[in-house]
Length: 374
Image (cartoon, rainbow, N blue to C red):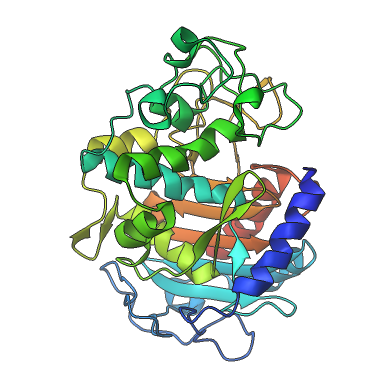
């Protein structure tokens, strides 16, 4: 399926799920993008209530000492690059919340590959609960014959290889989203090369479902979505399992990450060894990739649809400790521990229809910096 067709289908389906009863109304007045303030600046992290209400504490840019004169440039850039929703969260509180065009706060949007972060954390939870071990062969949970390879080669692929994009499966196939056995052939030994291959990632959902003997959506809802007050749903789009939610729900997941898997004293993912592995370089072939998380501030990086290695940081204008979920057509979930900041951007492609990182990231962060630096 071509990317443009894929996104069009996603956009169509997002309309059907946008009227969910779990939607979260906005606290903003109109589309001003600047909610009412709470002062003085709080020192503790805020967690929005898990009930499906519009209650969410806010902070003003004036209180934080941000440069409000630069906000118009930020909004102009966002609007002229097909943005639907944009949120900045500081210490758990909304500072900027802006919607464009006809998109509203309770509309759902596809996360695309930014949703890989959800699967990565859910895998850690399943391991913590004893349902699986990421060092085990994938065939333990998918059975023999999930690939088109001899059994001895197939059994060399582990769940960790799926998490780190190092399965060695042939990414030169016509459709890298395909999860059928005939699409999954040997190219490299596992752990010897990094390539952004979506098919093996998607099969992680089946690994989790089979290991837990639970429907994937139901297990995700019980372990992550409901405990932190998210709404949304994974929907099957062709071979892909795509998550749809409001922008605020994406922001909630960002807050969970900044608190290392803890939500207001409730442990969602207790295994800190797994969390640290998930959000740090997971292999030596692409330092900017953890367990399905993109990582900034590394000395080199690789990109989807490329075999090349590039020198320097993934997003030079962004803080070095940024971790991110980056999806097709510029779905962005930025999480910055040093700033205790979550930034969400949903919308259409800013330029090219790219699978993850794009030039939009660096351009956007230049404008964000102009606002937040004081």
